[in-house]
Amino acid sequence: MAKVGVITFLGSLDDRDAMRAVGVVGGEAVSLWHGSTDLQGVDAILLPGGFSYGDHLRCGALARFSPIMGAVAEFAAAGGPVLGICNGFQILCEADLLPGILTPNHGQRFICRDVELIVEQESPWIGNRAVGTTITVPVKHGDGAWFHPEEGLDELEENGQVLLRYAEDVNGATRRVACVTNAAGNVCGLMPHPEHAVDPILGSIDGQLLVGRLINS
Amino acid sequence: MRVTVLVRPKTGIRDPQGEAIGRSLGGLGYPVSAVSAGSIFDLEIDTDDPKEAERLGAEMAARVLSNDLIEGFEVIVG
Image 1: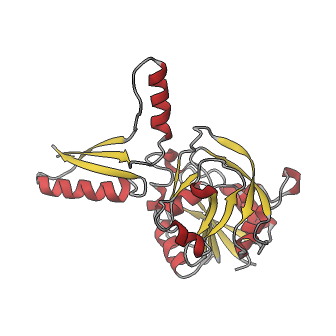
Image 2: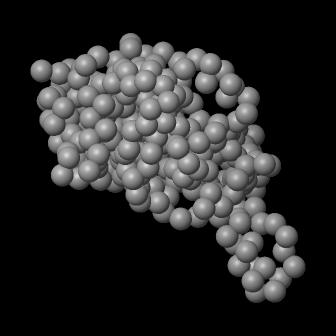
Image 3: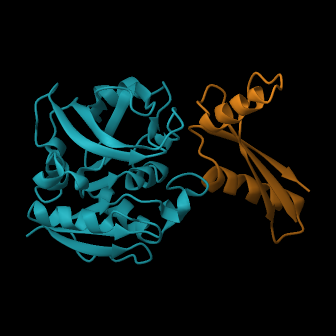
């Protein structure tokens, strides 16, 4: 059974939901601690949501220097699958493992609701769903506007690094981008919470696609 | 010695904090057409060498205190 490491940073709050979601899709969740450098032989890594270091300075800007992040960077460089959700996405961007940065929502409101996401790339991260189809996953963030300068943006799209786009403007994200990968495609991040969309009793189960990728890689 | 790092949003970068403050100032009747909100960091650095203090301040500003995708910084020694 694939082992998925879920990192708990100081101020993570979705780590337990993430571990449960890994179990729902058939993986074994392994709790990893931000202060350790030991990845315990996991096959994939998930950086969960939350408010690490109270979102001080910039979201994710302090957690990116956690001791475990050096090991995460090495794991990613070796091609290991890494998924960052919400604060985890912010940390991966601040660590330069993903392009862009997350900035405050343009509407100055915390947003907490289901959102519709359009598949932009046929990717194993989204169960190879067809381009143009949609999935539904909840968001809950105040600093979720992904920003990328115009320079290099077309290149990202041409490389197939934009996997999902918000069907409508949710938070002011550049080109409504919701989910991006690194150039190699093994590191993926998004503000919506797939780990909150894995159980039919809570509505959508589309989150199983993204979490499921971690055990099928 | 004291080093001050000023971090400002880059021109053209959306700044919801500045916008909210600007709207409130306008609501109070002040003739303010735009506000840009940044951060000030006063650092006490353990060195007596101003050049070293400036070098360290700039390094910390670039590596930690700012993100060059959205922000610029200025380092002031003394």
